[in-house]
Length: 100
Image 1: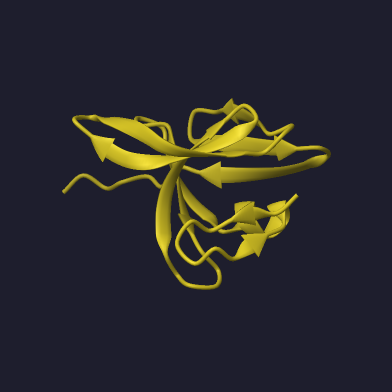
Image 2 (image 1 turned 45 degrees about the vertical axis):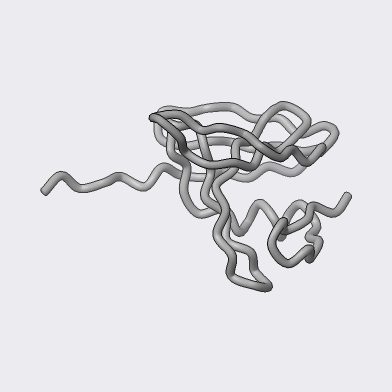
């Protein structure tokens, strides 16, 4: 299974793809991802069996494109999102924002 970057169309093995996730926004339930090849940054929602790409709109995240990833699972934690596929798993932490 190879997962594409929607900007440059490069394809990545799941470990390379999910290792490039940098931040989980629990409020909008989205993950920030940066393409290791082109540097494009995307926000995406990890859903059972698929990834949903879109944009924040009016206080929520609207999914416009979907990429099927059979067997993909997710588990929300207090300050993280745990992603699993087959026997592999990845943890995407929530970046704690400082109040000024």
